[in-house]
Image (spheres, rainbow, N blue to C red):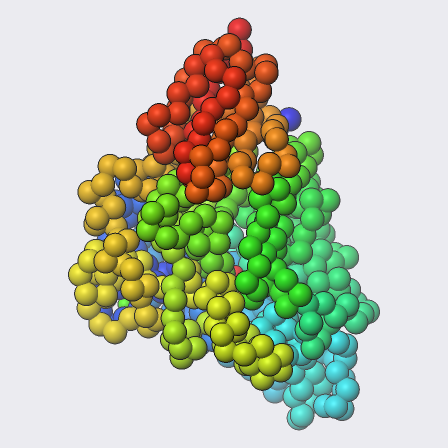
Length: 568
Ligand code: TEU
Ligand code: CA
C-alpha cells in the first residue's frame, strides 16, 4: 500500500502540460512564447492545476521542436528571454502553483558546441561526450533504426567514424558512460533548480545507458532497421546513473521528477519509482499508447480494445502500489493524438460527454494526473488534407516511408497520419472564435484546428456544463478526497468491452467509478458488497444516475459516475 507524507505533495497534485510553441503568442510572430504563458496563468489557476510542465524552452534549431538543444542555459529566442522566464516562474509561484521543465539529456542538438567540437577531431576533449564507432561508411555498426526513420548511425567521413542518434541525425546521443558528461548534466540541472524550478520531466530517460556490445535489435513493425530498445532501454547502468543524479542533485531540493521511459515494463518502472531506491518520483509508461499500434507501428488505423485498456491500467495500478511505486496518469501529450478522437467520440453529439467520461476514469485512479493543453476543452484531432500542412519531423518521415517504401497509398497514409500524427496535439490552443482563435494576430507556425469556432476557451468558460468545469471538479476532488490518492484499486467486470468500472478502497470508504465507452445506454452492476448501502454521487456527466440502494446503475451514452460509500 502506498503511504504518503507531506513532502510528497506531488502525490495529490495535478499537472498541466504546456507546449509553449502552441499555447499563446504574445508578440504576434505566429509562435507561442513565455510571456504568452504568463498571460494565461489565471486560466490555469482557475482550472485548479498544481504544477505546470513546459516542453523544452531552451535554445534550439527546432529540428524536433526543441528536443534538439544547442544551449541548455539560454532561452530559445522566439520564446522570449531569461527575464521573461523568471517572470513566469515568479507569477506561477505567486499563484501557489509549481513549474517543472523538460530535461532532455539523452541527446543534444548537433548544433551544440560540445558536438561541434566532438566532430572536429577524435582528439578533442569533447569527442567522447558522444558515442562513436569506427567504420568505413558502408557497413553500419549495427542494425538499429531511428525513431524518426533511417539508421541510428551517421557517418563522419573526416573521422572515419559513425555517431549514434536514436532520434534525428541532428540529435546525437550523449555518452553517459563519460563521468564528465554526467557532471555537465548535473550542473545544468543545478542552474535551473537554483532559479527555483520545481522539478523536471526527463525525456527518454530510460535510454541513457546503452548495452556496450551494441547488439543488433529485432526487426519489428515492418521496419527497415532493428529496434534499439533491447540495446538501449533500461540499460545496464541506468539505475546507477539515476541514483547518482539523485544523490548529487535531486535529493538536495524539494522537487518532483517524472521520467519518460519508453519500452519500460512494471519491473523496471518500480526500480525507477520505488521511493526507497532514491531515483525518480514517477514515470510515463506507454503500454496504453501502444494498444492501437499495428504491424506498421504507431501510424495505424487500428482502434484500441477496451478490455486491453483496462488490463493495462489495472496492471499498472496494482503493480506500482504493491512495490511502493507511483503512477503518472495521462491520456495524451505533445506526442500523442487527442483522447476524444483516439479513445472517445469526436463527433459533435458525444464529444464533450466522452471527454468527461475519459477524464473521470483516469482522474479517479491512483497516481498523478497530467492534463495536456486543450484536453480540458475536449479538443479533437485535426484533419489536414495536405502533408504540407504537417510540421512534425516524425509525421513527414512516416509519410515518405509509407508512400515510397511501403507503398501504402495516399488514402491509407493520410488517414493513419490524421489518426496518429503528433501535430494533432500541436495545433494552437484555441482561446476564442476570433481570427486564429485568438492564439496570434500573426501567421501561426502551424495551421489551427478549423473547429476552433466550436471548441475554444472563451465559449467553454461561459458554459457551466463544459469539459473545463468538469475537469475543474475532478481536480478539486483529488484535492479533497484522500481516498483518490491512497485508496486501493480493484477492477470490476474486466471482460466487459463497453464499460470500465473499478473501486478505490480505504479502511473507511469505498469509491465506485464507472464509465461507458459507447454511444449506447449500458447497465453496470453494483458490487454485491455495496448493494443496499447508501451512496453519495460525487460526480457525473449526467444528472440522472442515482444509485441509492440499487443493485445496478444505468449509464447513458458515454456516461460516467462516481459514488462514495462509507464503510460502517
Ligand atoms: O519522445 C520519446 C519517444 O518515445 C517518442 O519517440 C515517442 O515514442 C514518439 O514520439 C511517439 O510517436 C520524447 C519526446 O516526448 C518527443 O517529443 C521527442 O521527439 C523525443 O523524445 C526525442 O527527444
Ligand atoms: Ca511569439
